[in-house]
Length: 325
Image (cartoon, rainbow, N blue to C red; front, side):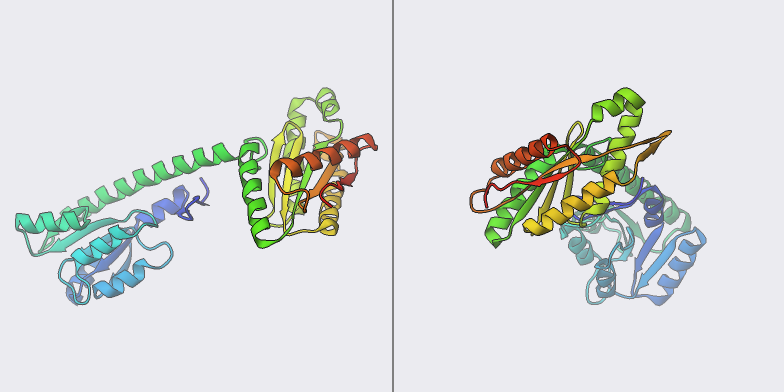
């Protein structure tokens, strides 16, 4: 799975990145000799090591993008001790989970409880046993790997719920929600919003002549060309069947005409290659929110009416609605 960013902005790495993150370790220990010994062991086991001489330095490292997720924290450190560092890490409400191994010379039951309650996942007493440390880090890696699998599965389900599986575009339900939000935002900021409703011309003939697999290939290619013809923040969705919907924020009549014509030409100028050369054209209805056109229902109805005019006028053309002007 490729890296993705979740709806909360959290970086969700793919399988290879996940393994790399789980092999990165942060050591926080104010004893230079202990740091060197730990680093030597960890690097010998194949870990990538970052070392911090106190809790404040470790905390600063953890604020960086994609910090290590296996943490070995000494209990007693200047500025910020290991227990306080655990609390700070667990109090954060963003970022991926980090597995914390707290290390100390304290071995009383109350000390163990205090460390675990502060957010540590595991606990080791000094002097460290090399083999035990290696085994406990292995446990941490397994837990982090399981977490990654759950996060990836969740994000895949989220993607499937909001996107059209065939084309990879937004699906209709998601687009309706985003269109409503965009119109509310545009009214508040006194900007205009344009809508393009597109329909592939004679698409049934494509399926009847070349087969449904070719029809699917046409839909995917049209989706790709549309996405490339608009700005990165414009919204593109499969509205249903061979119909598509594009929302263009902050545009006037002239800008939406130019955008629609660019999309129409990108589809009509080159056939889709799927065994044979399949010529494709598209009819487009345009509408721009205005004084008499403010709700999502009104702007969609205007675009749909303009699309009907485009088809009745010979297809392979764009028509701008005069509603709301």
